[in-house]
Amino acid sequence: MFWAVESMVNMKQVNVIIETSSIEVREALINPIRFPNLRHLTSGIAQLLSVFHHGSLEHVSFGRNILATSTTESVIVGSRTQSYISQ
Image 1: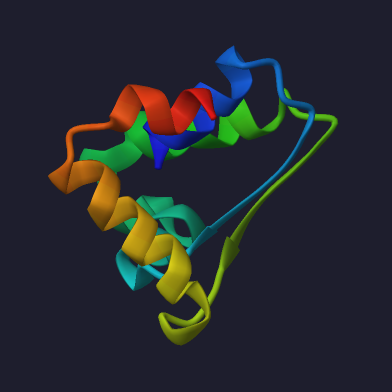
Image 2: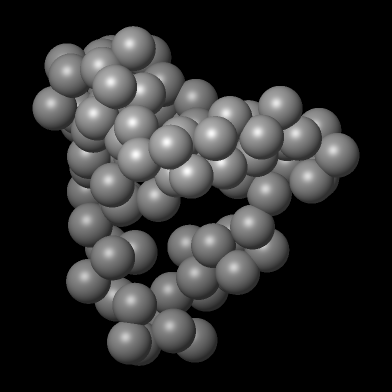
C-alpha cells in the first residue's frame, strides 16, 4: 500500500482514490497503535495521503475489487510492475 501511494505522489497525481479489500491493511490504518511494528508504514501512508489535493484510501469488499485483484495478479506474475505504474 505504501508503494502504491508513494507511486501516485511521485507521478504528481492530485486526486487519488485507492481501494483495497485487505482487512489487515484496513485494521492497521484504522488502529495503528495495535500494529507498532508497522508504524513506519502506516504513518508514511498517512503522510503521503496528505500530499494529495483529494486523496483517500477506501476499503471495499473482495467481490467489488475482483477486477483490480485480477490485474494485480497479472502484473505480479508477469513482472510488469514498472509498466503498470507508468500507465
